[in-house]
Amino acid sequence: RGMPLYLPGPGENLPQEYQRHGVSIGDVGSLTPHGDFDFFFNIYLPADDPVNAIGTPENFFPLTPRYASADTRLRKYSAEDYVSTPPSVVKLDTRPPPIFAFDCCGPQGAVLTIPLGSRVEELANLENMLRFARENAESWYQYANGARGRRLTNGSLYLVTGWEKALVWGRASFQDLSAQ
Image 1 (tube, rainbow, N blue to C red):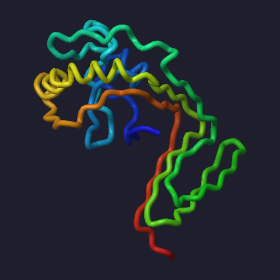
Image 2 (image 1 turned 90 degrees about the vertical axis):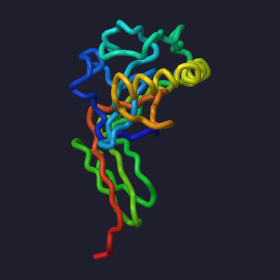
Image 3 (image 1 turned 180 degrees about the vertical axis):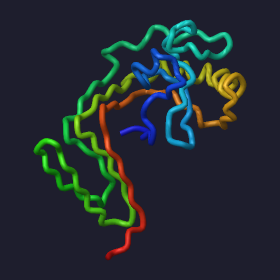
Image 4 (image 1 turned 90 degrees about the horizontal axis):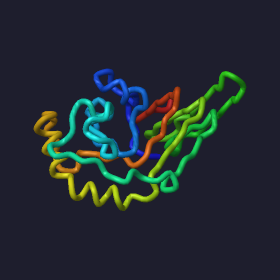
């Protein structure tokens, strides 16, 4: 279900308007070694928008028109939902508060719980966004590596095409468990 972030919340150093909404479709940034999204700018917002207050590439102009709501998929995952990698097996008690128990019966695995559910928005029509990215990727890398000093290599810049957000979550992983 997308690119998981170890630290999913927006950084405190980002503009207040960005912190209020978090990651959005059209955000350009990179993934840090710590597991968070390093936001640079949003392609759908003008350079003077409060979300883009840190800066934008030289000669930046936003992608217009903004995507239509008919071109997005909106979903909600119910409370007590979870995602796990096989061969994890879940046992769930749904009485409040929900209790999750996972049997870690394989050599490795991971679990993400979303006890209060989550909201998802994905862009279904990517054509305009992909064309815009092809036309502007070079200037985006120049901005990230120049003005923002990031030293990104080819393929390490991300353009957000969807998001999943939850108020609370739990995560766990395991590897090389020995039978005891």
